[in-house]
Image (cartoon, rainbow, N blue to C red; front, top):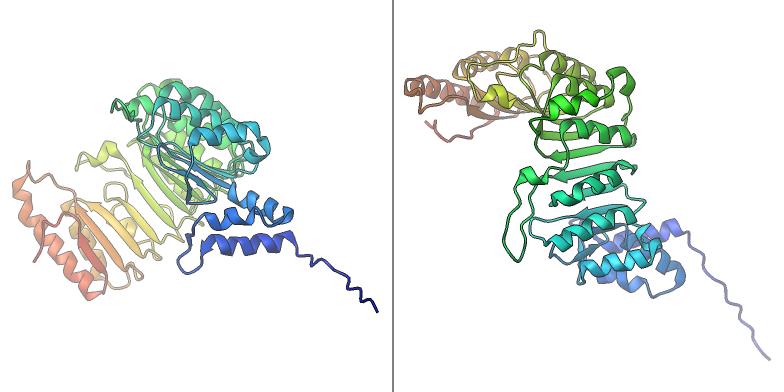
Length: 404
């Protein structure tokens, strides 16, 4: 008697397999990426597993100078960066799997910088770009390529490039990736953008030549409704640029900005637009923070209903205005002696800033010029520390100059 046993394939949805592979890829205890060879081994099990593992493996690619090639998040795979470029050039379907691309490094040769610039156009489905280290001669085509993409996250740096052989360093001025006006132009091309981080610098001619080419505020209203985080603290925005930025991004939750001293009205409009969503704000103005006598006058300040943390100067947001941020939990404050004394008066009244739990202070006084100011500033800082201790607010003076 012959027994015939039929074989049935166990069908598992590809989405479920992909989720299982995600667990294999990461250490759930620490959320760190595990050894990359775990994913590589899955390529050779069967065709279905191969396709899923390959998609996850190439979803995130890091090519950072002389560092090992990184695939699938933050894992290192020993290999040559130029070899990877040749691979995806010969097999475009692999380049199409890349969703996150991290390229550039401080130490890199001119050949590596060229490879990075040529790689970006090959990866047509990129959603996230982290760009650090660059060379000026490759910026124009790189910018053109980025402008045609549909990104949801973009992080760029103005780090110069140091050649590994000659140790020659290109200055940051030779490595600029974009100005504030160019940042706005990028945003107009990326309507699905969720996060934009830029560490760059403003060119002196930018305000006159490039700002004139920007569209009107009404033409950009709400173009980036999903953008939640912008960190542009190294770029100093003019009034027009700030108005365009706030019109473009109506739902920002986390913002790090630097503004010109004459952008008072624009700052009011900007914060008013974000008043119902803004939770974390860092705002500075190099024009006034170098002069303790300068201030930005906004009265009244917009009600920031959701603000939880704030990093700023008392010349931009004076103590009186702080009292209106009733949800504020963390404050990093650069303040004049007069404003420190005023902050003491405000915090002495318990209802003021009821949720504040952390205060980091930097006195804004040039003691080398005004030695007579030291005793008054010391008394104000010590008084503020005492009030914070009473209210169980964690206090720190980052200058470490004024201790009991």
